[in-house]
Image (cartoon, rainbow, N blue to C red):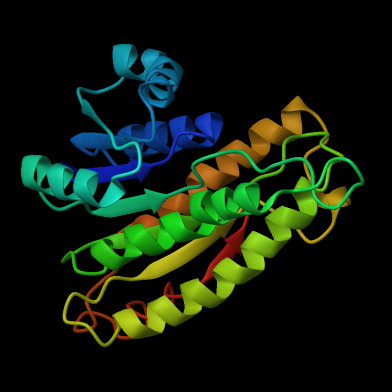
Length: 242
């Protein structure tokens, strides 16, 4: 991936996205990291989290596009300005709501629509365009639950995660029929039970490191089938929990 460009879409998971960009820079020696964020504040937060890496690490271009609601246009713009990405990491755009069915704190239909748009539809919109890029790997990320959170957000996160499983597996198979042959994989930040979630800062930081490592495992370009049919197929439609 030396000298290549990677895209990171999202702004909510600042710790995870910053560490992922840091690993792309230090381990993969990419030439450019493009941050596609929903808001200017989101880009500012990510840039500040990466300040030490940009100051001390190898020379790398950190670019940004704020897309608001027009994510497809932002992807077209990034493609025209910086060329095809080697890897696209698509992440949730907003934190999960903390209410569900409690009396007096119901999740409204409007809030549920926003939940689906920011955690599921965004991946569909990104994948619909990314699946037509040559030499690209697509990594989809399920939502997280904040450390110590006791709200129904955990149930919502599992709903999103299992729904995303079906989309990831189906898209991976469908993409094998296209000439672009874009591998698609999923990373889960939600676990089966609450007891498996991080409980303190050390465990959270460990999870952040594992997340970045998972992105490299699933987002690094695969060998061509001519080189190794087996290795060209094993990292497709996978779901990795970190």
